[in-house]
Image (cartoon, rainbow, N blue to C red; front, side):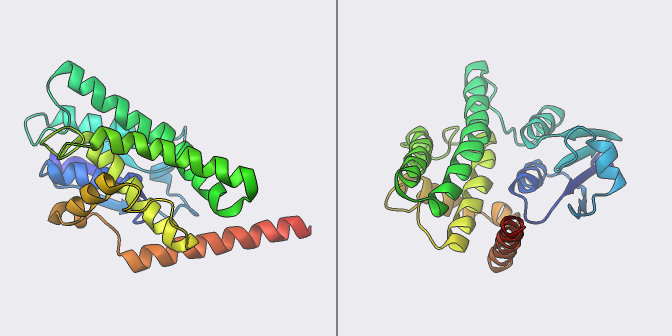
Amino acid sequence: MAKEIKLLGTWASPFSHRIELALKLKGLQFHYLEEDLSNKSQLLLQSNPVHRKIPVLIHNGNPISESLVIMEYIDETWQHQNPLLPKDPYARAVARFWAKFIDEKVINDVLWTAFKAYNDKGKEQEDAIEEFSQQLKFLEGELKGKEYFGGERFGFVDIAAFFILQFLTVLQEVKEAELMTEEKYPVLFEWMEKLQGNEVVAGCLPPREKHVAYVRARRAAAEEAASKTKAA
């Protein structure tokens, strides 16, 4: 089965890294295909015609899209190899809730408001920072007193959260601002440092300097495009 697994992703995407780590934790061999999002492959467009984005897992010729959906598929398909979700139905529901919270609130709301916090002024900036802080406080509170989000075992929510928060630290470095600090979120930072020290997890992270340079270049290109639009 392992030889029939393909992962379409990009080296800088936290969503791709989620799937890479899930596969590695299961001990699965897979074929990774790097996508150029400025010139998407026919395989990607055929495999995910609705959203036309990565990551996509192809198993036995069947494509699965959306990182959280893919992670559940991996866990259900290879149930007896390092389970990512707990067996207890309630604990599984809780894990799904927090994973969804991360995608709907931390990604959609927090990262967006983080950008606004860097760029806006006055009350808009204050509101953005407050929204940002509130969502991270929820995560901090859920993790407090526990080794991992699921308790003593590294699992589904840890994978969902780690690469997003890691990407946030890259954004902070590029923007030269500190919204997520160890002083404000000591529990999250201790957890992140622990995961960074895990060989398998660290092996899924892109090189820090390369990642920062990439995001900085993307930011510069976006700002240049915006200024040209205004000038026109």
